[in-house]
Amino acid sequence: MSNAEDAPRPGPGQDPSFDPAGEAKRLLRAIRTAALGTLNEDGAPFVTLTAVATDHDGSPILLMSRLAAHTRNLERDPRLSLLLPEIGGGDPLAHPRLTLIATAERSAEPSLKARYLRRNPKAALYADFPDFSFWRTRVLKVHLNGGFARAADFGPQALLTPLDDAQGLIAAEEETLARLDAECAEALALLAKKAGGAGKTRWRASGLDPEGLDLCAGDACARVVFPERVTTPESLRATLAAMTKNAAGEA
Image (cartoon, rainbow, N blue to C red; front, side, top):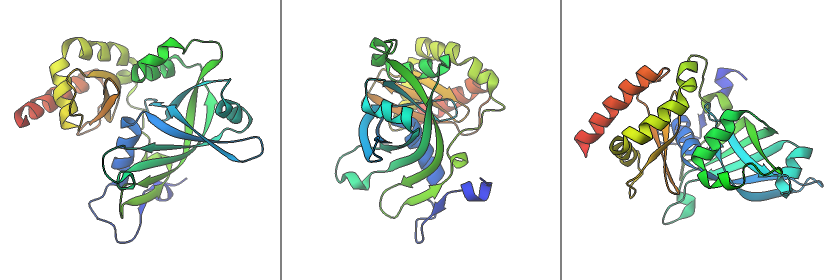
């Protein structure tokens, strides 16, 4: 797919300030409960609810039991759709939601398990049961409905995060997140509040990538977007220090 084909294609008459790719990235990283659609043996659609996390590049990660109908569906046909809706008050159709068309396959990659369990810690109770396995999705198409007159269709390159230059950052993720949780609770709370994560005080870092930091507090999640791409632990520290200083000044 070319870059031109992959770029967001907003509909006519939409707000020129609307950033479809940015909004899609935010929903992808901030929402951890999705509707999962698979295909039954007779080809009929089958939809269920699932918890979700993301790999470093944004590819959704699922944890599923072989006893579940949707797992057996994917074993037979790897095609799926995920709907990640933002929940809020008022008209539910006025809130943004992200639809992904994708395929999925099992993966024993340790980093997938680590990122999923940091995002969904209660899943540690059953993640090692023999019938459970982790699945990594491959996004093929993206549809964003950002609310009234805010919609776009695009390909995966506009949604996912390139990683080629960020291996140092990724390799240091476990150590970095542990340090943030142990030493930077106040800073994480400030950053979460600025990112829209109001009403919680104890936030923990659940994942990082070159474009942002994922935070969780109980069932709430927040996505902290970096002002510029971060590829090393050193640049991450400098970026977070500057962002925390700015957030403190605005508090």
